[in-house]
Image (cartoon, rainbow, N blue to C red; front, side, top):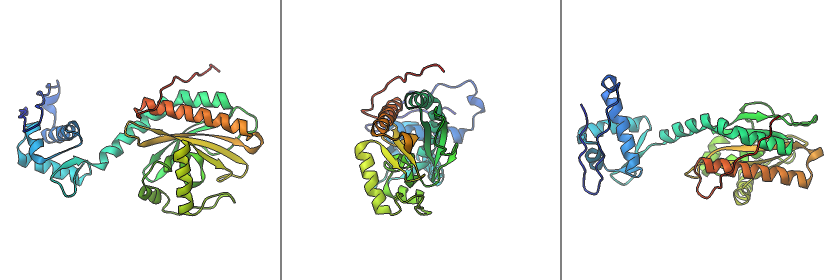
Length: 285
């Protein structure tokens, strides 16, 4: 049965949804639940039960039961102290998962451009659950290169530039959750106390990039910066790594500039306010 849209006070009436060719085979409760989520989003991210019923044309009882299920699954949430329903954290999880599927494809030309400009190993990483995970690697063009591992979970994000670039933009409780197993010492330069790490991450936010001066591997210097989306949420990071023999001030500055420019351009592609888009210049091999 098609829903009739009835505008409530202050609410804009939505036009009836066009009936898709295969809609007669759809499951009505699933369709209505998704319709409710779309309606909450269109209402600005939160709405009262009455408003949702008016906007969707569903009766209040049906809305209430559907919302209860969505809340149980984390796709919707009650706003504490107010009679409002909002989108739940599970929506963010799915959104981030979707972005991470698209992120390696979008980042590929930037990784290649950084690799060509610096000659160094370049990594792309993202946060997956409680772990910082490497999604893609471009190996250095030099005979002497940094062996920082392949794709997969990064051990000790507190000691890497790419890990710190991601951690810096997270709420403190989420940082603590990711570092719940402790802050292992990898070298004499590793930060192992949480207050000291917070101060280090404050500097990362101020500068717009993170540094790893032999904090994870002896003789290895790294620069990393975060990629952020339209809401300012970190969705990934890029880093470049060089052995100490090439870690001059000029070379580190080149790595920094290439990383920061690439992550700003990628952030602009994902809609971060104020980020400036750019097209990476990738030479053919």
